[in-house]
Amino acid sequence: MPENIPFIQNYHARTRHHFEAYAAGPGQLDWDAQPAPFRHFHGAPCLSLPLSADQFERPWHDPAPTAAVPAGLDSIGAVLELSFGLSAWKSWGPSRWALRCNPSSGNLHPTESYLLCRGIPGLADGVHHYDPLQHQLESRALLNPGGSPCLLLGLSSIMWREAWKYGERAFRYCQLDLGHALGAIAYAAQLLGWQARPLALGSERLAKLLGLNRSEDFPSTPYPFTEAEEPEILLALQAPGLPPPSPGQLQALEAELQAASWQGQASLIDPDPGYRWPLIDQAAQASRLPDDWLASLPASHPDPLPPLPAPDPDAANTPGHAALIRQRRSGQRYNPRLPLAKDAFYRMLDALLPRPETAPWPVLPSAARVHLLLFVERVEGLPPGLYLLPRSPAGAEALRRDIAPDDGRFTGQAAVARHDPDCPPHLGLICLAPLELSELQRLARALSCHQDIAATGAFTLGFLARMEEALALGADHYRHLLREAGLLGQILYLEAEAAGVRGTGIGCFFDTAVTRVLGIEESGWQSLYHFTVGHLVPDSRIETGPPYPDRSP
Image 1 (tube, rainbow, N blue to C red):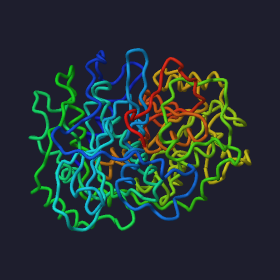
Image 2 (cartoon, one colour):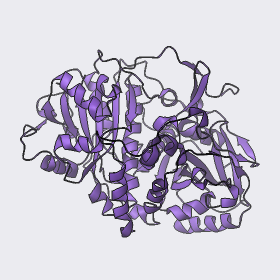
Image 3 (tube, rainbow, N blue to C red):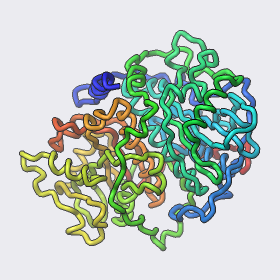
Image 4 (cartoon, one colour):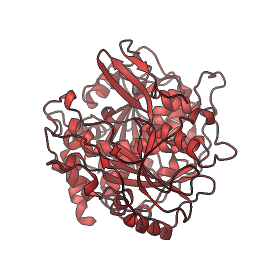
């Protein structure tokens, strides 16, 4: 609603980090009191899923299979395993923690997933919660057989998992995580020749569909904000014979579920939170999706782009699709002496340009509104400096117009393709200003909350968008912008792995300082996310174990 737009603008302004002070957050962390990382529904019937992704394995850069895989327990198990399942267990001394196939801020994982299905062999019709710890489905509501076949995936956020560590900024991180999760789903579906497409279902209706509005099924505590699940998005998984449901079919499914018998009691996330952040719930309520949210997205009509370049024929050691998804990690330390090959750098940037019918873009059917500032530190054949990657012609025009038009710092903006024959012209990559490496490192480190990781990799990115322009379409577009940024991060994570390097999402940065460097602080541009890519320095102290040690594929 229009009256919510000023609140979202104020929320974003209030949750900026500044050199002088950070956004409101907890004064200390007690890791022994961390919120539960997994939710279960006690008493709900469970169905163990097969660890089946390897049977569909193929090279990462291959196009989709000639024939899409039919929907069944094996294919559903593969999609859920590669999007939300565990990828490994890590241990260091007495500490042990799980990693998942989808990345998350602080490895806190606010995103929960629910499967809604009809007519799937081996799976009862109804709503099922996915339990990644056991790789199983917990049946929340069962329906009588019949009706049109469908396969839907609903996502929610337990925002307290992020708020416990990050305070008022946590709502931002939940939406960035949603973007990562959407990318993870799209890439997992691609392995089977499926597509994941969002459905125009508003937040309130989605809560009813997933049973998130059933307060009697969730723990009754003095702190309901710790247990609540925020409805996020509903996706149609398009497999053979399973088109997206029509609005009428969705309404019929909603009516059936309202009359269904629901099973299971949700496990407790946090019995005794040390802080309360009401601003997070208020931001969630102000930005919830209306039922027509898909229609409100700006249409994506990019100029046709050439296909992504084929992989290097000498890169025979690139893992397969499923293996690469499982091995994805967030790098913790990078080697500042190793440069990145230029062709790998250009391919990563090319993968960030929207190709509407290619994964992962169908999960985000909108014009590109997030553009990229690059701190290019160690890329072979490119001078260190500040670069821009506009992701649309309109973005390129706006950035050229707004960036420091008066002070002369960036008047020498130059298209890289004019000087480097290896740079694909359609990238539209711009060199703003060459800088001495030491100066560039100091700048990248300082803007990313003084974190060395932003200065020791091959390149670091800042994600920029014109927020007021997006919010003019509705307060829910705040979510869409952050999700777009998260989706770009997921692309970078996997493309970095395919190139033999590693990526790291950076949620802590000094918001206004980023736009101030470019001279666009007053022109409506906002910084949404940071990311860095580099050569990993392994930590030999940490041991790695299999994700499901008691089960075999």
